[in-house]
Length: 308
Image (cartoon, rainbow, N blue to C red; front, top):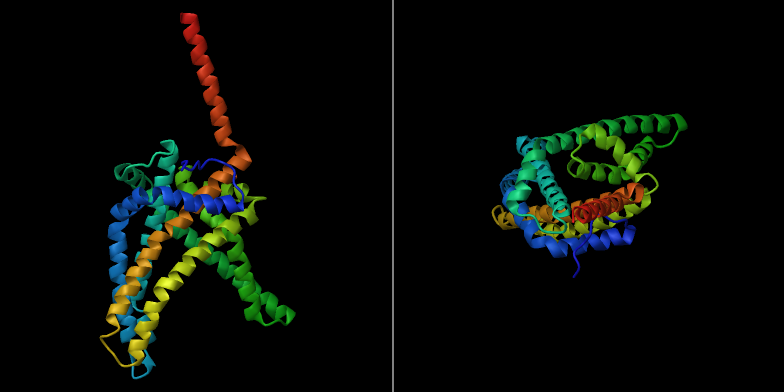
């Protein structure tokens, strides 16, 4: 099978198809890099998730739920580790892809990916938290205005709030996804990619959103098929009064969640496909590089003939 060329224009269907094809061709070296580089974060998140689930199940006593235990320190520690772990998988995937492009379709080694991960780590993680903060503030403002509009027009304000936030989330979904990859692909800062991502996705929002939605649904369905049954049986054992019998299901569910988190690299690959497609449509960067290369070859050939 011919190796995937990332720097080319794609429509909605080709973004999805090439994403799966790229993973099929590169899953061994890619997963090797992810598990080697992100293994510590994955295992730490796994341990935090198990401890948090034990705490959640232990909060149910006599039919009463202790919400102070559910949303205690373990919950926020697990949330923090989950964000870092998920971000590291994304960073590792993006670094693998940029090296794949630079090496002209050759799979990079773990050490090469690690060198890029070290370089981008601080900036990428900081960008993730800044994006979460900005998104939270924007959603809060939209919720406020949605509630105000609902009250003014006499419409059920909760509906207006949910409609406003939902519409904004759907609109920003592809834009924010592209921004994450651009931090690595263009070695840029958040301020730069914030403006550039909107320019790139202009007139191509529906194609990008459609491809991302399909990949998101695939990952979500995998999570439903793998994780939900373990959660169901754990809750069933708890309802039947089996205090210790739900432990295997808690551990199994936590392991499967981390597995899904790694498989989520599929979405990051799709993000890269969309990014390179948008760049080609807007700037034809790879075509210009080929033209420059032809010019260099001609210049080199002329020089040799003159010397001869």
